Length: 222
Image (cartoon, rainbow, N blue to C red; front, side):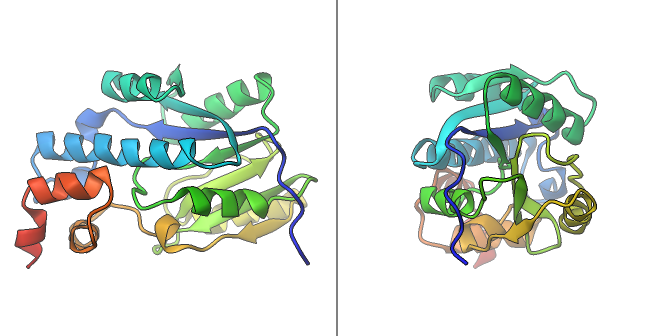
């Protein structure tokens, strides 16, 4: 069955943690300044893809980090100050604000999927039916690399270990249909050194890849 057209007012929510603590699992391979530069470059890549996606009405970055807020404002995104103690609380805060602003659906897209493309995002949106439902993009380790929910607060956010299964369980318990979206750009998030090396070996086309080249990650991988 062909998917129905997605709701017109989809707000994209990009959560960004305090970049002082960004990508700590890479601390043995990148300095704190290098990790911060990489995190900001990936955020720029994600926001660029969202800006060029036809299906996204508004983009919101929720963060406490001043540099992340500045980048959001520079690209014309909404910049919401994170008042929550954890990621899922921040997403609930952002989805609540989006709904109050007239969003019909929200797309949670983490800031560490630098290869995501506008066509990936539009593909996600095309899978969402008019009635309440959820579209999930799995990561390679059982996580969730994108969550599109209609309406914005259709289910609780459960990002963390095994989040894909947890989100599916939450949706099923509420009687919400779930569709899965697969694409190389959505599946590759950057968490561990192997992710860095794989990203650095691809033909450079993103801010994140250029940062890795400048940091010598490609030569270390070789």
